[in-house]
Length: 300
Image 1 (tube, rainbow, N blue to C red):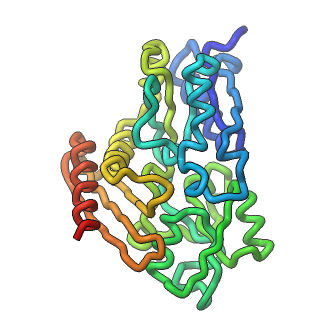
Image 2: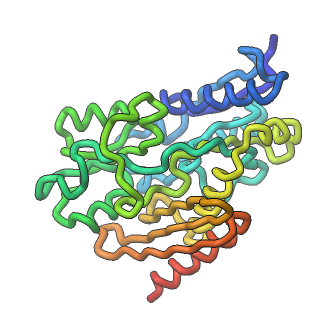
Image 3: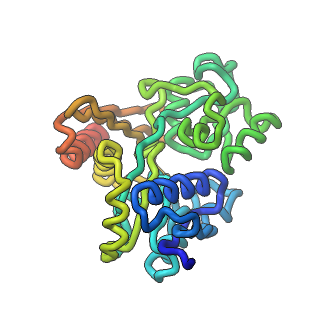
């Protein structure tokens, strides 16, 4: 039978794992999508995947992992798109909506190469292409030498094994999804605040495609959506991108949402932190308030 839904995704190993998870969740939620070939996975190569020798902050930032997939969605070549939510711009392109957020995986970063940042030798090289990770590491350890390190998880692990750097930082969520959950030492958010929406998977679709929006509503995880909504609102107020070290994490306990946010100088010599709490149903307002507080701290 012809597929009912065409699912666009990056072609990396991790992206395909996330696509298959989405495919399985849709099949469990809807009988019409339960046949093995009902949801067709369509790999799409993005600019971010093609350019591996430069930092993302130098060549355009987060949209490099989504542009070609957005085009396929708007042109009708795919019906839904699966993204690591931290790769999405804070404001979605016209005509595209986030139809679902899957249950969020562990949002923390893991240190590869030592048990903690404090355990790294004096002057150690830390490989990362993330300004957020570099700035927080330098704030904790000004003696560390930051060297650029890009590539997928397997590539970065190979580069560390080959001695290109003594340590690196990887998302715990990605490691777990790849079956590498025991790799590295997870860092608590007080030490290394994660990227906005890290660990969350977003499913996008055309904003006027009500059939697909109804299907996606069946796999949406409300607590995860509220958490990342608050974080992304904070980021939007700060007009954040890959060019600015910004971090944020929202957590929900009962009916209360707590959001922590951070803005740092690139060299880590200055770090501004703020925190806000409130009703989880006010996630957007909490995010905007925290964003404004961080803007005021920067101005001071």
